[in-house]
Image (cartoon, rainbow, N blue to C red):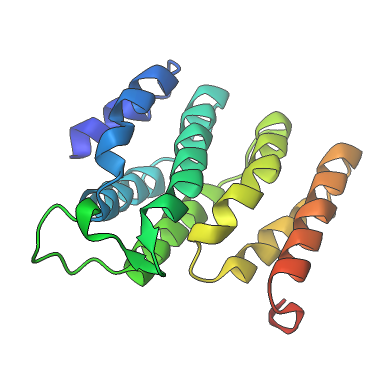
Length: 170
């Protein structure tokens, strides 16, 4: 799995077409959790956040965020998506793993352009986070940016967090 992650999240070339071919495997919660854990390990060992790498990550995050709601049935994972009948993967485990992956990714500073792309994508991530207000610190730091467009995007993200979730958590 490690070599798959390293190949898909390359620093030196865009891999969105290859990541897109890989999407069918991410529909299986067992596989998704393992994949996200490997991504988190890989990301935490690198500090380089060049634009190609970030583009690949954002593309992957957007897909997982948008697709996640369709594999849920009444708040739980639909049986057809489990790779095994003995699967112990819960919705909460997927959300927590995704959250750790996202936080690992955001722990290193992004370029201005990539920060803007990240902030515009946040809305698709909220459904898959175990605790969406955890992004409040990152968004608040972006709001304090000297770049007006980043500040406005961060303000919009804070608004979505406050209106979509309990504002006392922020």
